[in-house]
Figure (cartoon, rainbow, N blue to C red):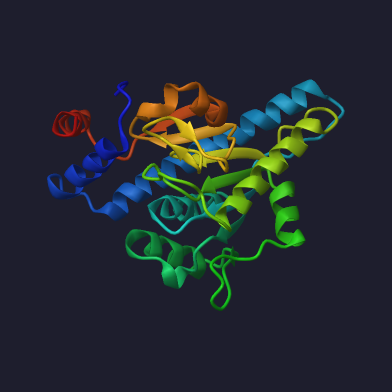
Length: 260
């Protein structure tokens, strides 16, 4: 499917898959997260090989690697938990930073977050009534030292402005990326990988907010989104790779026909 889709058309794909094909939403999320994890693993191997080729004197570790996975409170965050599980199974050192506590999640996202928790994968959660975990210097250091920072904070349904404290998380991701660009030798880690879309980007209009993740790689599901072709979006997307969720082409075309 090469035609870019709107956020409404993407939701229609999900609805049709669940209601007409009887594919549970949990399986759609599993397919998305597993496919994204496979792309991330390949991206890190490619990055390591490129760095090693540029500087023969530098030893670059082979997979497994280290990932900081930032999960929001919706289905995008649920995708992040699936990614965390598959990377951990592959032997990666994974740490999840949960913008919403597991007890605040619902549906498929909560199921996947609970699995990650029971696997013993470290999860930094909010405490007491705080809206999100306070980012300490130690947390930021772990982001900075990771091979990959995975942005699974906001999904394609985002519109409006990013509010605090989430805006601070996004600014910190971008600050780490900016620091990376100034390092001697041009080290390419941590790579910034956005899931479905960079958080803070309106995918229908292709418009970035004041706090929008600048990604090296965007792993988007089903198809590119309608606004990805705008110059503003391109400045934040990096490379774009499409991952399927198990919906056949006929169903995707039906969704396009249903929602124009």
